[in-house]
Length: 285
Image (tube, rainbow, N blue to C red; front, side, top):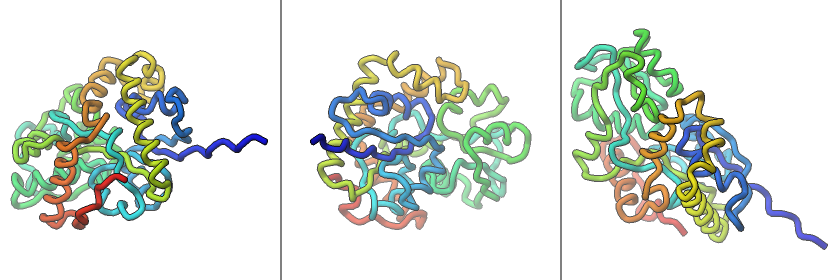
């Protein structure tokens, strides 16, 4: 009598190069002893909503959504995106534009990018910006270029391509965050359902670490998966993207990573932008 194979874990992450790079070995069964994955690709605004509705076992989400989902999910200590020099940018057609009362496109109201933007705007635009318009992140730069909005908050590879749209960098949310806190920028988190149990959660975290190391050890092995989902991105841009967002914090949040996450969520709660977290909310089993 043979035992039934363990069911696959449903996981949702973005098609962006950092996520496909991190999860390539794990998604393709090249991490011995790891749980099998049933992968759904979705932009971060979609995965944030999936997490709030409890629609997957494992998800890549914005750190800004954690206070709304940590009753059902636990933050994994690896696999996410933190770093330095990798913050969201505010772009405009006109250099030096005053954003007071202006329309700004953002990639999601529960995104970490928008949270960092609100913390920045509280310091820099004291009279407040105007209407906030939520758009998929790949539509934001064309909307700014075409004058549909006055400014756009962009993430991911837009850091490397915005000049192609004739746009100007008005501000770097990461520079503001790092300059005021000295901490790395928390962007995307990996969360898993608490009901999976301590053993499965630890096994999953170990598997993600192993997948990250496998990608670092043999970057070419992940290239087909990365480019298949990179939305016609130039390979050099994909490499820049990976280099910026996959770093030591991806392999292990560590003391500095956890300090950055707590710092962001605590500061946002103090500003009334997020619900406060309990003292043990970020603890991993």
